[in-house]
Each structure stands twice: as C-alpha cells, then as structure tokens.
Amino acid sequence: MGALHAGHLTLITEARRVADRVAATIFVNPLQFAANEDLDRYPRQEEKDAALLEAAGCDLLWLPRPGEIYPAGFSTTVSVKGVSERWEGEARPGHFDGVATVVAKLLCAVGPDVALFGEKDFQQLAVIRRMNRDLQLGIEILGVPTVRDDDGLALSSRNAYLSPDERQRALALPWALNAAAKRILDGEDVGAVLVEAREELLTAGFSRVDYFALVNALSLEPLDRAGGPMRLIAAATIGRTRLIDNIAVGV
Image 1: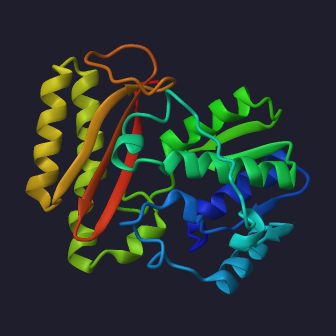
Image 2 (image 1 turned 90 degrees about the horizontal axis):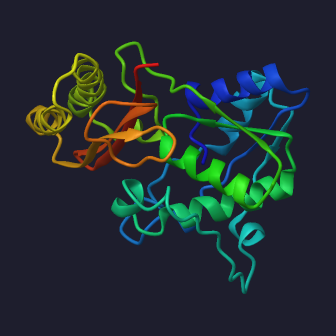
C-alpha cells in the first residue's frame, strides 16, 4: 500500500533472486479499511516510492486508481473462510475480505509466476496462500522474513505515526514475543506465559492488546501447549497506532 520502507524493498531484492522480471503494485485499498480506521491518514508518497522501487531493481510499477480496481457497480468480493476468521479477522471485521479481493484482482491483472509477501503480516500471508490454492491461480506464493530495525522493532509504514516516546515503548512488543518464545521452548505453561506477556505490554504503555497468542503456523488455530510448527502472533495499540508482529517458535 505504499509508504515503502526497507521491508518492502527486501521483497524486490528477493524477487530479483527468483525471477527474471519484477513488477510491483501500489494501491491503498479502501476495501480493507473499516469506517473507524485510518484510510485518510494512511501515508502516501507515490513519487518517492517509485524512485525507491526503481533503485531496488523493480522493472514495472502499476499504480491503479480506485475506479480502475472497483469500477462503478463493482459487486464481487472474495472471502476466505477458516484461516481469516480469528485474530485480525475478529479485531477488524471484513478486513481480510478486502485483502483477498484486491490481491486476487492484482494477481489476475499482472499474471505473475511468483508473488512475494512479507511474513510480518503472517495471517495475511496465510489467507493469500489459501485463496491461491482454492481459486487454482497457479502462482507460487513466497513468504519473506520480517525486516526489523536494529533495536528489533518490525518495520511498518504505521511506525511513522509513533511519537519518539511511543517508538521507544513499542520495543516492548518484539521483546515480549522473544521472551515468550524462549519460555515456551523451555517448557513453561503456555497459558501463563501468554497472560504475563499481555500484562508486560500494558505495563510498558500499550493501551490495548487485541491478542497475544501461540498458534499453529499452518492453520493459525490457537495452541495451549507446544507442538508442531508454531508461531507467536500479537496485535496491540500504543497511542493512536495499532502494531502487529509475530515470530516463529522453534524450527
């Protein structure tokens, strides 16, 4: 959705490694914002983004306008059941319908052999993978590990909303994820670890924790004990900014 940072540009670098030509789309998708969310406030810097993409080795940039993606009378949406229904799906009703619809349209329009998405939006990646399989789009979907600042905070366009004090306090999120992962791998009770992690975030200055959960990395179903491929996922609000993050637990 634009406002590019090093995490986005890493996708271009990885795409150049696996493909001969690289295309990117930038589209601030109104369908994935609820009425009370930050569509109008979302940062837009198209000229700067285009220059960054060109310097990173992107061959083609498509900047569609809302009327191109959603022409008058548009009435078809894509809904991915199951994997979209918990976590972000509960916190932001309708969000993943908007994501799945626009990604399906962009993929069909561009026709890539491979499409790369960041693991920072881990549930989004799971939704897109499920949609790609179910609609038999035949695209190879690759996840690219989260890119972080030197202090550990996951790069996000929404980090620009943070005040200096909030930016420092926000470090409690990756710290809590890493500490919880270690404790779970050390055999501590999962439920107790998760409760204490939420309390740590609130103590650090987050005003709300939507979820802090251990999930199966494939189905995103919650786990109450360690086992199989695991992921810790979290979403919490500090000031006016809602941050999400996740890390793998174990191999």
